[in-house]
Amino acid sequence: MSLSLLLRSVVTAALMSVALASGASALEVGQKAPDFALNGVDGKPVKLSDLTAKGPVVIYTFIAAFTPT
Image (cartoon, rainbow, N blue to C red; front, top):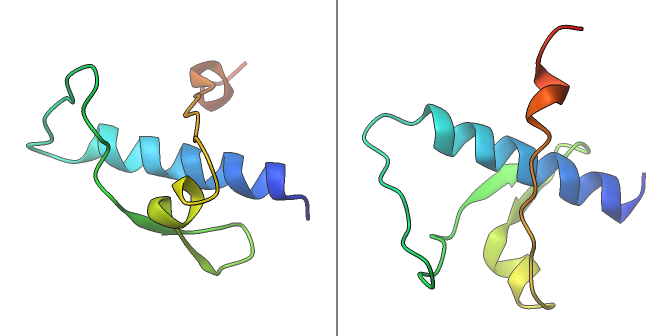
């Protein structure tokens, strides 16, 4: 399994969790994202802080990927 696929899975799950969380507030431009941990596709936890320690993290979502075709 590639690191790219693992990162995409973690980021997608994180975005879904944030979007579905009740009472979640939006971040302002320039604010740091709160640290979180989610299980990767291999079942092992991955923390945002571990990824950002290696360099910048870009969060990108494919909204259309979750809609029926």
